[in-house]
Image: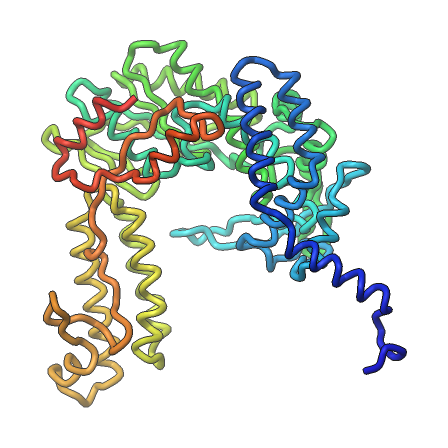
Length: 490
């Protein structure tokens, strides 16, 4: 096709090529350093009570071109990059990304409604609503999340672990161990469940208390959503699927720990919160009930309430489930193990994969199973999961045997075993091909996690987190050593 008959004008083609070149050559490392320095200054200003300075620094960050480029990069690299919003727009090419960064601005900004879809809840027949913002709105949320994150991290509850920088579910489990493992620890636990947490936050409370440009925050909160071609306006809540939503929810729930400490300074009361799931330890059932009443009032101010059906008070000997683990004291010994629900879920997931692989090659089945097995084992490797890993290996082997036998129902057991199971240097029979070997759950070693310093700030205490990269106690042999570290942790 010659230049005369081309749909794209020559000048536009040159412009796009320039934009693509600019994106590819942009110094993202330099931009990250610049934004990180600003974030550190915001965190330090908030820590020192210099809130006006922190606000000015937030403005500087959200109007920085470096930050805008990083915001666009973030939303075009994450898992949702292929999911378009209501406008159907995707930023897939370098020139589209560069154009987006150049047009990202708060001037006259109006958030578009989110595209609502429903996805199945894990281990449930119910469906969970998921709202998908447009690419532009996602980039705006990413930009303002960068400015809000250092403030949130500095003012956060020390024992909040979900959607936090440098923290995860394993840190929450370690802290739970710290709170409940000793003989003198509290024996009663309040299991809290907030009804429809993300859907019910009071917008006015957020506008009054979240330290962010109110006009922009108002756009994020009240964008509404479209489902089946109908626009629904939301009067409360943060949209599930919005990039900034977990951060806003965390900030709304922060203050719960400080409130409990003020009312129960020496009653073995500890809060462990992971997003909207939380536990409160107590020295008696009466104290746990008082904690529940205080939390009910705390949530009511924010437009939230506890689910009476799911919120309960249990004794440590009875045990409870939290974040996929079961916590229980058995004959005075505190144990953390994968929960029955988590075990049932992984068995079901493996079963579905094997059932759908009736006509697959062995290597394709191994490719599908390995990330599932490894991912589950890695999540649970910081608790007492050795026996569980062994039992799961046995369950998976039986499933695979039935899979192999079904494929060759006219062959004998030895022939089937020789075809699919082969010896290695350490084992007599392993489900493998000449190039691929099936992962076993028990291949993953149990490694207890070091306790995190609860008052460490990822924007200020950077040296601590750099040294914490090796977060496992690899030489630990027993719960006794684990307790030793628990007593010494800060």
